[in-house]
Length: 92
Image (cartoon, rainbow, N blue to C red; front, side, top):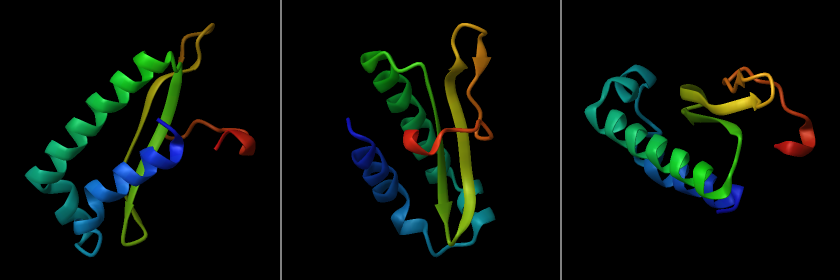
């Protein structure tokens, strides 16, 4: 799946909650369930595409409501990917 499709999926999952307060979104059971589903899908896609790592964030009302790193930023050194991992601009 192309990055545009991933962003579209994330947008569709959370668009209905975009105008709610950030804490309300983070604490809602629906958000927790959606994030769980998203994490499973990301792991499956990474395995299917042999992707070593990625970082993703969800923003609502211009506020960060969720972010997570998956896999490795450096597979040789076993350095985990985090939301703070720096990327070259061409890789975004």
